[in-house]
Image (cartoon, rainbow, N blue to C red; front, top):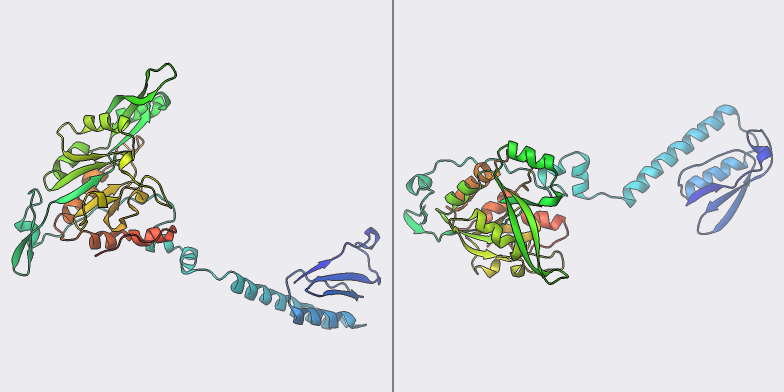
Length: 360
């Protein structure tokens, strides 16, 4: 319980007196103790400490050194009781303990939705990579003395903040636009005609400024040599279709999926369910800046760093993601590799989402 001293009359404050001062105790039983001394206990205590305080209060005369000893004992007992109570009441989890010592971020993904840049993948030169160059469309890997033909890798790519970043032209600050162009970012303006009508019955038109992620076209070209490309965006088709027409002039995407192809769950909306593409997902990988987009298949996702116009020197596509995809193209099942690298099932569980998919 807690000990509360009732307010004393103003004339008592700062004076020596022998009046009886009431001491109220917030215990399950209503108890009022009257004492002749000025003992102020300011911490939470238990019955044993209260009993000692009461015994001390009953004494008529104490020599100064004895009173000081008792006060010191009382303070130490109260201090240790507080510590024990905090330990019992607020026992931390393993993740909290790790965070206290600064290890949680290095052992697990941070609690925010932003991911650190992926490390540059340096692939060792193996016999398999020498025998089967990465630019061929069908990959062969050595397996038990023979060769096993693998199906072509399927790479699902997000659009916004993964391949491009787009801004409503009227709301884009001029200084951001100028700095991005000066830094060498490729860009174009897009006229989007919405299926929604204005109040006068005319189609609604909006103007968008689009910046391409550095290395975009070379990235698509090289991936197309060893994988099937699928665009999967949660954006509306009225906006995304003309944009993709601009960046995919060579028709490298064999399929384009828009918001109607996404699904909703009790945890998030606009989820990209990869099972609509194939029943066997051992050779299917999705690259998306929003990890919640692939929460139904966490072992198939690569969480990439979001791209914006303020990052004109971004190198993620060619220096980070492309080497990783080349490495995955040589794997019979890409999921164990991605599980070991990103630990996405554990990351989702940290955010209260159960693991829907698992490595087969």
